[in-house]
Length: 145
Image 1 (cartoon, helix red, strand yellow):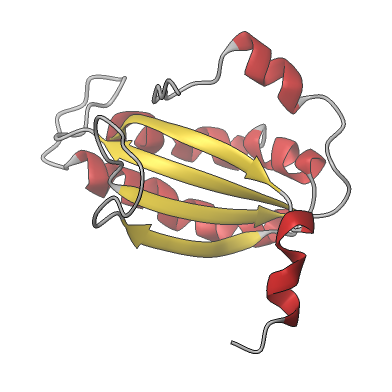
Image 2 (cartoon, helix red, strand yellow):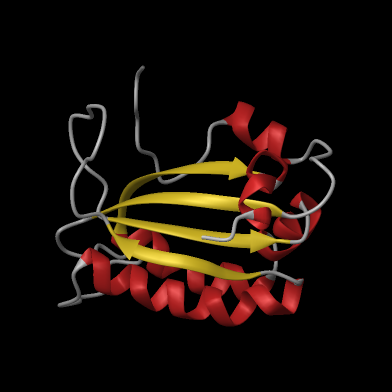
């Protein structure tokens, strides 16, 4: 299995994003790798680390998500690899819920999102985004654990 972190999706991934998605909520799993030092595309000087720049983006995204019917579900640091093998671990995992792929698309193309995306670009070395639905995890809803 080849793993390649990226900051921007490929043309094929963008095309798939605009296709009708599954019915119901979408849970986007984000595996994040940060730059050691933030690098803003406009060349501004900064003392921020990549993690700190991305945190500015994440804070604003968590405020924006409810406007589009979604919400942040989980954010945590990657501590170690429990099973399997990858060349380099991600730094953080974040999961966000969108009521639909359409709602996610609307949020991503909003002027608010465009304004804060500079912090994402400055902080990220790359990431994987994995689109998931609740259908496969329905058994968790019936668990007494």
